[in-house]
Image 1 (cartoon, helix red, strand yellow):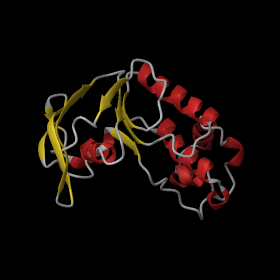
Image 2 (cartoon, rainbow, N blue to C red):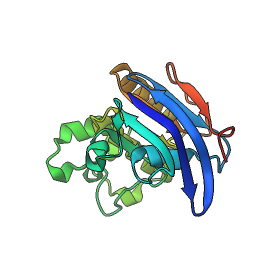
Image 3 (cartoon, rainbow, N blue to C red):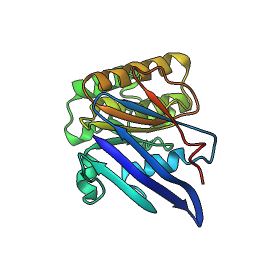
Length: 201
């Protein structure tokens, strides 16, 4: 169980949001909505442990989630705005094939985003949409219970969005948790919208 209690975030010298509270349990998805500047990305980064809260608490099973950053990092898989792809490596190598990850496992992850036929292609040759799909394929390799997705549909066509929804649904069906920030609707089983517009400072 992930629980936020009275979270606030400051960017520069500006208060982005305050008094943010929510819970996400096994098999649940929280979809952050709101206009640009409402703080969706800031909240995702805070939950990821990348930025500290200005106030409030983030709890994991009742304990301070941010007290042990390396431990918290093992609980989550974060896909942000940047695709974090090395153009000099092949598509498969970007998924850690060089770290002795079995090729069959890498191909399975690529298949989840319809990229397996490009496994040996240099990543620099991918289109922007294909780069985004490669970034999202990392989700299939993650055993982390919490997925944090910041605008995951950016650059995706309709078919790719449907594949993403199916992959998220599988994760939720296994008891995983998802927090996603998006401008576009995601068709997810039991997802709860959380509108940050009313929470912005």
